[in-house]
Amino acid sequence: YDTIDLDRRNFNVDGSFNPDTSFTDTYTPFSWRLGAVYELAPQFVIYGQYSVAQDPPSSSSLFLVNAGSNFDLSEASQWEVGLKAQLE
Image 1 (cartoon, one colour):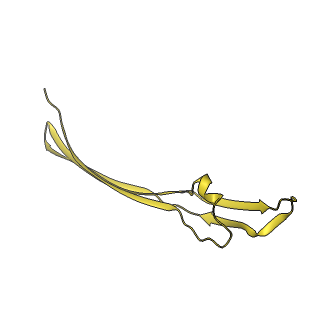
Image 2 (tube, rainbow, N blue to C red):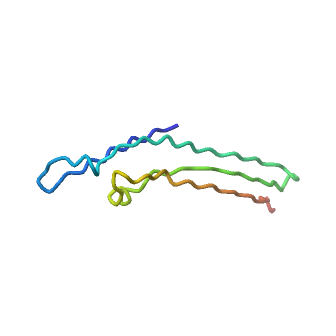
Image 3 (spheres, one colour):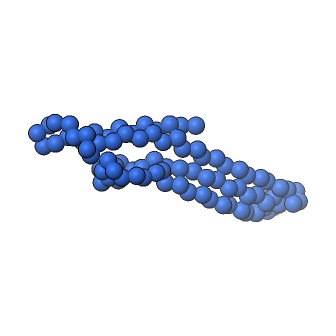
């Protein structure tokens, strides 16, 4: 379990702090994976898994957003199913 604290501070050309375009946010991503393996025969097994993950915003996108922008973590899910065999 992770927490990502984002604190973006923008400054004007003269070096003064610009609160209108600065912002802070906190993200609490939750990733998980579930899988199973089943032996069909001594030489063959089938398997499957499902996973869900979240990625933090990339550093390049943080430079493009303003204080009023509302964005969340990128989410992804993946299925995997297969058959494994030991051939002799």
